[in-house]
Image 1 (cartoon, one colour):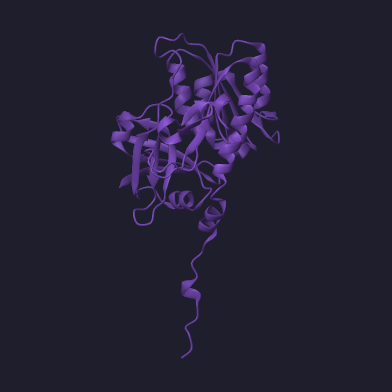
Image 2 (image 1 turned 180 degrees about the vertical axis):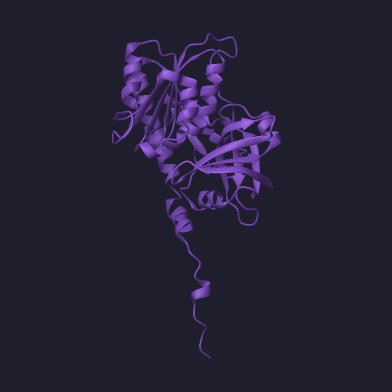
Length: 288
């Protein structure tokens, strides 16, 4: 069991939760994730990226959106309670420009919606390695932005906010300032994390400019160790497993159509689990 140290609702559906996980906190690196179970009895295993960690305190911070039955159950847990299990760190860490002898450069980090949370430790590590970091944050409306202060602390004046409705920052799509930056030159790498369609079009935007573009995939995942094969994707024409080969890949090589089809395979079951309400107690007794 992992005790919940703090819990904050960043919006109506986005929760930030800090839990005790000392081994994970000490070992984790930017880009890695954990498998979480809300309860031990019938708990579904779900992957959540580590948004932050404090090795001294022995805690990790998870930021997630309530979109299904398990995330709703997780969000219902309160401070002082406990998460049944936090397994990790899993996946390959982000390759941080400037850490392994490579010259630092200008890296543009693009986060869509809740994708800003997993992007945060990556942007932190990039900045610490001496890179110039530009952050593009996108959301449907102003109230859906998360971790803006944390990202501004990293990017400063190089933080660009985009909303679909124009309620904050520029009105439009994250691909618009991304294209402007690529066209101006001097962008060495792009890291995009968010909805698959957003990442797909970020890759289409950077490809004509030959800019390396890394994406972090969040596919259907069960065990997180490569055994089940549920998270498989096609990258460069080869089968890869997100949990052990990723979660980060060359976005220009991802088969986005195949990935979209696989991610929609369990929509009916997900909806049933989310909407199910047990009515056994409401069934009248049978007449003799």
